[in-house]
Image 1 (cartoon, rainbow, N blue to C red):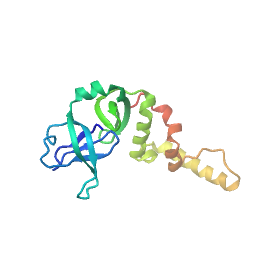
Image 2: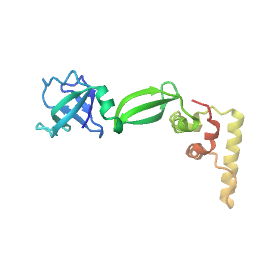
Image 3: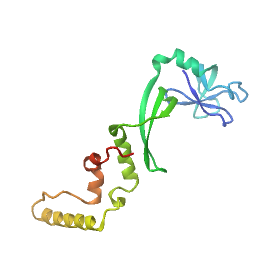
Image 4: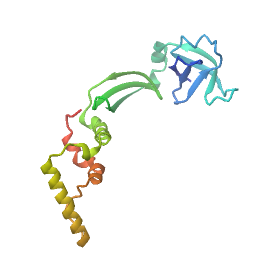
Length: 184
């Protein structure tokens, strides 16, 4: 089991394991507390004090170079697209991973296909169609279509598109996606 240091500011340093579990060192004075980025764990068990996290009883320090050299067949590369709320932009990262552990990551440009889910998330997070800043003319046209559709639906059904906010937000992946090429 190879965990990576999660937070060295804790009284007992915690480590995130490749399985996405958090474990802690058993002793407050453990020499691995302040020095180790990675550990090779030989013995792991439950806490005697009722902590929720398992405790590391026997481990050795492991360097990043050793992880790269000896565990290379277990490493994966993953590209991740994300919506950055503060900058209102899509970012891309390429991560080298060992299970749930992110060993390294760097910014990368994204293809339109990779960026699309993050752009749609940003569209929804920013309020969807209600906050798109539609012109008064377009909003008036949209309201007329909504009204006409409602009238036709009351009679016998309608072939007019559903342009209300909830319908447009729910189908943004269909009508908005073709217009997002090159946007970030």
